[in-house]
Length: 497
Image: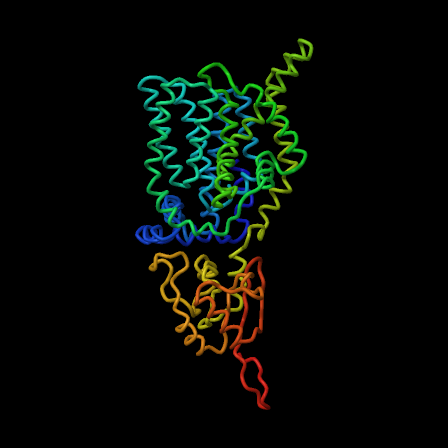
């Protein structure tokens, strides 16, 4: 997993979500704290963690420093997946499951994201392992185990609050195991403590829910896409893994009080995403990365199914061949099968590391800006969150004048800064003969009408008082030079410079 994560880690510039992590984490702690009161409280603990990471990074921190914690977290998660397979089945199941987790393209994708989701997956998988241990422990050891389970899960929920859906998976596991009242009481106390600790976050983030206004209701196709991402997007890998995963469910319920691997892995893989999809039918909340941690259940089921298949094969073969089916050679054969799946999906992993494969590449936009901007040039960001490019790569915009900015992002406690009113903006632009506009592509669409008055004023002044001279389009962003027409010598107009 570490090798997959480090491969092509410097794939190019940050995309906008990573850029938010970068510019917020480089603020002071009081500035981060002030920001969280108005926006992005759900990522607050992650920003504080990344503040420490970037502070200790040698030199000027960059994209690799931003993404390294996710790489390390993904590697830890792979080890924890293996530990679950070893504890609840046998060593070869753990080995196969850990390797399968590592070669899954969706895991490799988020292992290289400067966001919290790989860390949440590590915390959730670690909490699941502690849950299994606590359910098996008794007396003082059991109480201590439940305390550790609750503590790890609470911290994980503070990294992202939707990790709380893991409680549904663990409750379902206890139900399938027909656990004793003692186990239910221990889990209930831990779950109650997690809910209590998470309550302040839930209250604050609910007030900031307008941030998710861009989401829509998931449908059956969304669920099918997630299943394919969990098992492997290429057809050959997907259908084999699906068959083995179903075979892994053949012993879902064991003896009373016994937590089988299937009873742990199936609720983990299914319940968090299904619960979030169902809730999203009323208020859209679902994005696959919000439940990335649930993916850990899929390779466990597939590895368990492969082990079941090996057992069935051993019973069907003659005695000598059956012994061979139980030998270390079988473990090696399983490892080779996983490596074959990895080789089959290498083109997907390679493509994911090509610059520009994320929704946008702010590094490329900043590089284009650095080539054309001069000190003193007026710059306009439309809408205001397009300023994220300048906040992530300030060197490319050094010496330019941000025409609409009233207060910088960090002091104002906002993500992108406070802007002047429409009247002030018009007066500032009236003094400019030219202006560079960093724009979202959707702002170029005919009929686009921003909600805020300042944004409408930006668009109106550019369209009414300036003409377009140059344009560069990079992914979802456009860099445009607008110039004010001047009166020609014979009554016509021509662009000024």
